[in-house]
Image 1 (cartoon, chains in turn blue, cyan):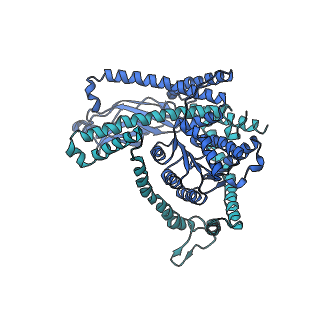
Image 2 (image 1 turned 60 degrees about the vertical axis):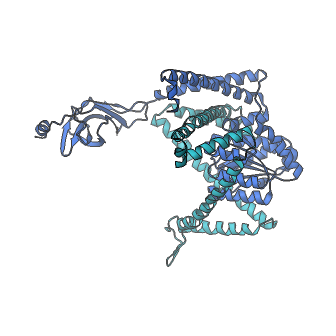
Amino acid sequence: MIFILCALMGLAPPTNVRAYDTPDDGGGSINIEWQLSPDDAQIDGYEIYRSEDGVNFTKVGFIGKSRSLNQDQTEDGITYTYKVAAVSDTLRAFSQPSMEVISSASWINVAKMNIYVAMIIFGGLILYYIYHARKGKKLFIRKIAGLQAIDDAVGRATEMGKPILYILGLGYIEEIATLASLNILGEVAKKTAQYDTKLIVPNADPIVYTVAREIVKESYTNVGRPDAYDPDSVFFLAREQMAYAAGIDGIMTREKPATNFLVGYFAAESLVLAETGAATGAIQIAGTDALAQLPFFVTACDYTLIGEELYAASAYISKRPLLLGAIKGEDWSKVIIATVLILASIIGLVSRFPILSLFQ
Amino acid sequence: MKKRIPLILIFVAGLLGVISFVIPHPSYQVYDEWMRNDLLRVLSAFAVVLALGSLLRVHFDKIRRKRRNWQYSWLLLVAFGGSAIIGLFGGVAADGILPTTVRSFSFDIQTLYENIVIPLASSMFALLAFFMASAAYRAFRVRSTEATLLLTAAFIVMIGVLPLGYSISKHLPAFVQWILNVPNVAAQRGIVLGIALGVVATSLKIILGIERAWLGGGE
């Protein structure tokens, strides 16, 4: 009866319904595609029906008109059949059922192949230069002002008899910016141990705190000054963003550190910290990979490590050839990316003549 | 041995993390989920105890030695003890054994958080407005070529987004949009590319045991 009504009303069903296991996923999902109904402009949308026996169909989804793809959550190992109905008010025009389909989990995500290739190329380049560095090849690394200033900053604090404040930011231990900051902390702690300068390291995360404490302790031991290590120099302050900022502001105004390091992951508190530090007259060396906070650091700090410089810092300070080799590998990776970008831009420009459309 | 065990652990954990990116199968993802969530949470629990111990030790020491502003440490200790008792025995949403309501006055953890911590954090956040003004003043002082460029670009963008910009030239808003969409985004993408490669290199160095500063350095 409905079929006759649909025919009378001229409501045509979608065609070529195709159901297939969602590729490169962890299972539990089937994609359903169809060709739009010729009456797509007049209908409300499409209903998706599913059956396990090919006879009894139940509605499992609805999608608006002009759309021809839907994803259904399923149970792996069960055979399903799908139908799609064009819906207009109370009328439904059903498609022919799809072929039978079973969802399953993939072992390899082939869709990420381009990333694997990039990982192999970049990883290979980095390992190649590390290998060369291991063989004793001399590697050039450009000067990074912020890192060159570390020695001066520590020296200044020593001369003034004031402490150095090292702020690791809000990042968790699994964030690379935090790990990079911990690497720098290790090198800075060695210098403070050598100069016998007081180091203050307030932390926002309990795990980062425990790691930072061990790093500082090890650094003092490595330069032969375990006696100079103060266990209370590295401490947990607060997990709350603004409580952490308020606590550090308090330390800055009370202790008046000669040098502030703001290295790691920062959010809105970056400016609060950097401006307070600037007001106390400290030399400030900042570094973060949080793009939104970089302008604040550039404005309020004396030196800023921008993005990758943060990751290169540990190698730069320690001057260990193996670490420098990794930086060389990074640089060559950038050359490859820049070359591809320039070529792609030229192709893009050539295909979009006239060049006067640049401002559009 | 003291350094070798952490290095082996890092190598294995790092490698398993990379593999989880390649294999979407649930039998492997379940393990990855366990590593990331369950194991890390257990480690966090131990770390929290150490961290709170550190916090208390620092403030007890401050009171004992009567260091500058030592009185505030009492405030911290009282707040710490009070919220610990209310949280442990009163429950998060007043569902514990300790009554956390006296007539219309509630003092359960959620209420305390919403009425003390959030307003205090908001006050700190509000300070940003003043800090922005002072930072902007510092940034816009013409001291170098870069500062001059910054000032010029900022001036054009500020004028261009205002109705005044359109009055000066009908092309100005489009030019401002171009500054924001092309040179600005290009610079940001350059930084992001560097960051991405830096992340790959740092991860590789740590996984392979080349970067050992987090162990306190050494070969």
